[in-house]
Length: 529
Image (cartoon, rainbow, N blue to C red; front, side, top):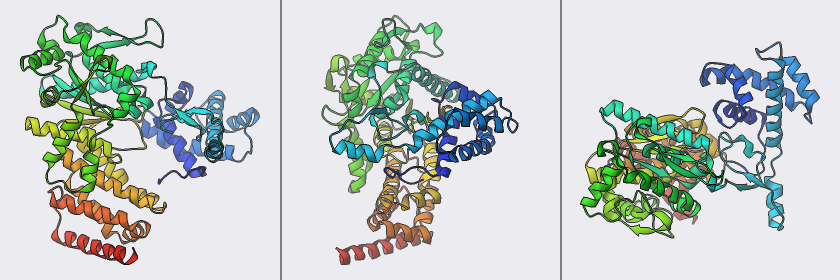
């Protein structure tokens, strides 16, 4: 809980919690360790509960030694052999791996390397990422790097992306008795770096193409998968990108466009190739660049202005949000880095979308934690609603653990609110950090406002509960005011906006209380500054 403090090592309890989450959730631990964990239960819930005592036993025993060597590992594994249903070899492998991880956690190089960097020294490179998903990032404090973009998508990401696509398509078919013809994905650079290209794998599955490395591991080629081998027709997929993805992955942009070109003119019936069907319809409408399927901000720009508009709070109605999204995201990115503004093509493609999805790749962030979720997925959803007159089907694919979970945006917002924004333990954890803790809390409340404005998927009880936690809970209210009065004022402003804009059906008494507290805080600001 709370923010990371530079150079501060984990305490024993934090090590236990972190390693437990790694063992249960990470898909990047050795297969031998994963196999041993599976012996503690038939599912993740059982494994998590049953392995706690065993894990704490190991951590406490290892922590009693200044230095860990093979003899110590053998000694501990022999002591544990009679207590748990694992062989001595299993114990040895578990203890050795946990001991190595503890050692890397304890040997953070953050402070020393910052000083060394300021002195002009060389900082050893190291892989960056989510510590739970990718425990090999320890020790922290190295010069982080991501990957080689030529390896995207890697084999695991291609498989997991395909699994996401299949889940979404089959769920839609089950609920609607027909296949989705057009879908959309949001493609971010950092998600691609951390997952190895899960969203790219998802796109290829929709289109019915296979990524292969026939010549070398450094070059990716595409093969068309015959219709008879697919579980679904070829789905028309609209990809929206951010500017960082454009600058980091021009090679992947070309690969996606190549995949579209491979399937758009295949000699296949339109009812089995929705990419081709969409292109035919766009040509008939004289749309510019009818084969364009990747859209993003103009060259030199990295996103929209939606987050600034929401934050300023001066927008009159949601039409302003829609206009800004279309104005900034209507640039078609085609082969050989050709870019052209294509408003009609983008708008017509949006109008036809049957389901939207985005990947949540890290346990560090939920959809309520980052403003870019409402900016990109929310902005697209609200634009779709305006153009089609229908409510968008939005899904979040949580790939932060071994088991992929696909939820509606409503469920994802609810989960983010309950586990973080409205969680007293989470709130108090942030308030340990003077000023910045309050600032982070205020940002989360603003994100909920942004999600309400763009997805119309924030339930009224979330706002009621926010009022209860931040204002009726005297302990949290006073701690937040003490931590950062300006953050408390921002929270009040955003909650008043939620009421004024119709996202929160608040009791008049609550609104009066919010206004009264805001005036008190404003008076303090005027007297102090």
